[in-house]
Image (cartoon, rainbow, N blue to C red; front, side, top):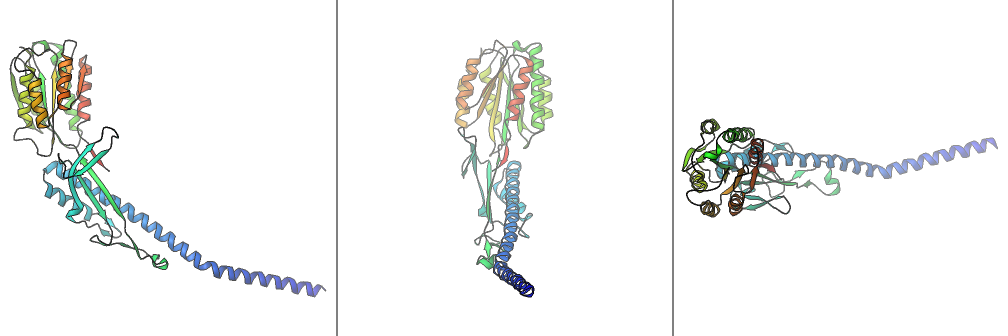
Length: 347
C-alpha cells in the first residue's frame, strides 16, 4: 500500500513537471516577443531623443546665424551643418534645404504662444523639420526585432522653431532745462542700467541715440559699441525747451538709417520729463513711425510730464507707456524695457 502511494506521488510530480515544460514551451515565444519589444521600444525612445536634440540644434543654429548675418542662405546652411553634427540612430542627421523654412513668428496676445507663418514678415524665425522617414535623406530607422512582428522600421519626425527677436533700438532722450540737477543724473544712471542689461543678452542689439531740448540732435547712429552711447549720455547738460516731436523725428531717421538690419524689429524708446512746447507735435512723427512699422515705447519721468500725450504716442505705434516718479523708478523702467527686447526660444 505504501509502495502504491509512493508511485502515485511520483507520477503526480512527473505530470506537474511535464505540464510546466509544456507551459514554458508555450510561453517562450511570448517572452521572446516581449523582450524584443522592450529592446526596440528603448531604441525608438533613444532615437526620438536624438532627433529632438538634432532638430533643436539645427533651429538654434539657423536662428543665431539669421540674427548675426541677416542672410537666409547662410542661415539655412548653418542649420543643415548643425543637424549633420548630431547623430541620430548612429549617423548625422541629414536634412534637405526645403526642410529649413523661414518666416515670421509672432506672439499671440490671447495664448502667449508664438505662431509661425512661412514667408511672413518680419523674418525672425527658422523652422526645421527633422525627419527619419522613408522620404527623408537617411530613410527610416531599422528596428532590431520588429521584423518578428512584421515591422522592419519606424519613422520618427520632429519640428523645432527658433525665434530671434532682433531689435534695432534708438533712445530719444530729454535734456531740456527741466532735467537740471538730480533728474539728468538719474537719466544717466538709467541709461547705463539699460545698456548693462543689453550686454547680458543674446542677440547683440544695435543702439542709436538722439537727444533733444529746443532742437534735436543725433548723438550716435546705430552701433553695437555701447561705450560710445554711454560717453555721449554722460556728457549731457540740461538746458532749453522741450521739442519732443523733433526728437522723435530724428529717432526715426536713426532707426531707418543705412546701419539698420533688414530682419530686425525697429524700436524707439522716447523719454521726457516735461510738456511738449516747441517744434512739431510728437503725434505727427508717431504716425510716420506707425506707417513704417516702428514701435515707440514712451517713458514719462516726474510729476510734470505729459503722460496723456505720451500714452497716445505709444498707442499710435503699438508700443507701451511707462511712468517713473523717481530716479530709482526710471532705472527700473529702463531695465524692464531692456529685458523684454530679446527673445530666443525653440518650440
